[in-house]
Image 1 (cartoon, helix red, strand yellow):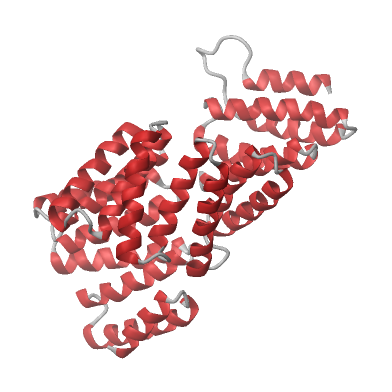
Image 2 (cartoon, one colour):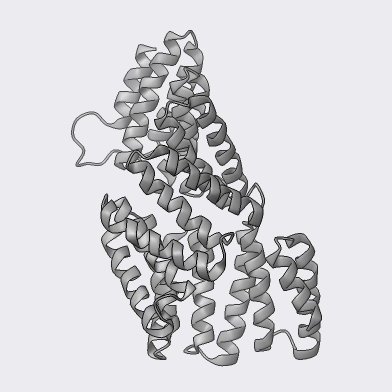
Amino acid sequence: GSLHNMATVLESQGKYDAALPLFQQVLEIKERVLGGNHPDVTATLNNMAALFKSQDKYDAALSQSQRALNISEKALGSDHPDVATALNNVAELLRAQGKYDEALPYYQRSLQIFEKNNHPSAATPLNNMGELMKSQGRYDDALVLFQRSLKIMEEAFGSDHPDVAVPLNNMAEVLRLQSKNDVALPLYQRALGISEKKNGAEHHSVALVLNNLALLLMSQGKYDAALAHFRRSLDICERIFGKSHSSIATILHNMTDLLKKQGKYDEALSLSQRALAISEKTLGNHHPDMIRYFNSVADLLWIQGKCGEALCHYQQSFDISKRLLGIDHPSVIELLQKIQQLAVVNSQQGNHMGSLYYLVRIYNSLSQKKPSSRSRGPTNCDWISQSIIVF
C-alpha cells in the first residue's frame, strides 16, 4: 500500500530514520489483519532487515531475518525457494559480522534448495559463499564459486544484466589478490561498464568496482589514477550511506595504504583513524576486520615516532587476533614481534613503564595457555618474559 511505497522511497533516498516507523506501521497492520505468522509478513520483515543492514545494525537486521525464515519454513515448507532466499539473507548478516562458520551452513542449505528447484537464484548463495571463502583467503575455492555463479546468471538473464556485474567484480578481486592483474583488469572494466549502464553512475555497485579497480591500479604503481577512483568511490558511498558507514571505512583504509606508499603519513594517519572510528562503531571490536584497522593506525603512529600510542593500538589488535586466530598463528607471532621491537624503541624514548605495561599484559595473556607437549625451544611466552626481564 501507500505506507509501504513511502517507506521504500525514503529508504532508497537514505532516509532510514524516516523509513523505519513506516515499515513498523506496515508490519503492525499486517500482523493485526493477517496474523503474525502469515507469509506476507516476511516481505516487511525483510525490508526492515535490509534497512537495518544499510545502517550497519546487524543484530537488529538478523533478528528480523531469522523471524522471516521461521515464518517461511512453517508456512511454505523447508524446500520452498522463498526459504532458500531467507536462509541466504541470514547467512549474509552472519558473514557481515565475521561469523563465517555460522554463516556457511545457511549458504549451503540455501544452495541445495535452489538447485533442487532448478532455480537461477542458486547463483546468489554461490556468489556469497565465494565472498566468504575470499575472506578466509581460500582464493581458488572462491574463484570456482564465482565462476559457477556467473555461468548461471549469464544463462538465465543475459551477459549484460546488472546482477552479472557482481560475480564479475568478485572474480576480478580474487585474481587481483593472486597478483593476476592482467586477467583481472578486463573483468573489472566489464563489471564497471555493466553497473554504470544498468544502475547509473552514482550506484553503490559502481562504487564497489571503482574501489577494487583502484586497488589494482595502486598495485601497478599508478597512484594518481588509483586515488581518483578511490575518491569517486568514496563520494558515491558518502552520498548514499552517509559518512559513518562500514563501506566508507573500507575505502578510507585503502586510501590510507596509497597515501602511505606516497609518504604522505599525516594525511594517511588522519584517514586511518577515521576508518578505525567508523569500524569500532559499526563492526565492534570482535570482528576480524578490526585487526587490520588497528594495525594500520599503529603502523602509521610508529612511523611518526608515536610509540606509546602505537603500542596501545597493537595491543588491541593482539587481543582480537589471539581470540580469533590463536596465539600460534603466524600473523599473531608477527604482531608479537612488532610489539616487542616497539617496546624497546618506546623505552629508549624514555617511556620505560609504558613499554613494561604492555609487555606484562601480553605475558599474562600468553601464560594462560598451557604449552604444547610437542613444542620445542622457546615459546612466545618465553621470549616476551625475557623482554620483561631486560626491562
